[in-house]
Amino acid sequence: MIKLGLTGSIGMGKSTTAKMFAELGVPVHDSDATVHALYSGRAAPLIEAAFPGTVVDGTVDRTLLSPHVLGKPAAMKRLEAIVHPLVREEELAFLEKARANRHRVVVLDIPLLFETGGDNRVDGVVVVTADADVQRKRVLDRPGMTEDRFEAILSKQMPDAEKRKRAHFLIDTGLGMDAARRSVAAVLKASAAIG
Image (tube, rainbow, N blue to C red; front, side, top):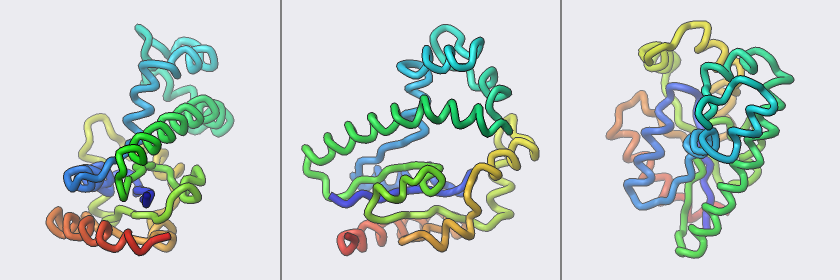
C-alpha cells in the first residue's frame, strides 16, 4: 500500500485537493479533522489539565487556548506532546483499516508534514502550492483572519519554496481546479512507481 503525504501551507488549497483524492476513491486521513475530534474527546481533559480554563462543555475552545500557545514555543511543545501521539494512534488505525480493505493508495493529509517529521512515514510527498499573492488573498478573505494571525501561522510553517524542493509531486491550485484535478489523477497514476 502506497502512503502519500499531502501537505501545503495555509491557503494553498490542500483541503480542496484532499477532497479530489477522496472523490477518486482514495482513503484520506485528515489530521486537522482528527485534532478537531480529539478536542471534543480524549484530548480535552488532558489539555484542560495542562492549560486550565480552555475547555468549555467538554470541548477545547480554540479561542481560549490560543493565547496560551500562540507565540509561546514551550507551551506549543507541551500542547503538541499531548495531541500528536493521539493523532498518530488514529492514523495507525486508519492505515490498518485501509490495509484490511486492500486499498492500493492512501493519503495522509498532514499540514505540518515536514515540520513534524511525517515525511519519514510516507512513500511520497504531494505539496499543494499556489502563488504567494493567491495564498495571501485566500487566507485574508477568511472570517476573523488578520495579517498578524496569518504571519503567526506562516512562522510555524516551512516556507513554500522549501516544501516544493522536498516534494515528489506538486499540485498548483493557483492554475485552477480543473488543472488541480488533472494533477491529482497524474499523481495517482505515477504513485505506483513510488517505493
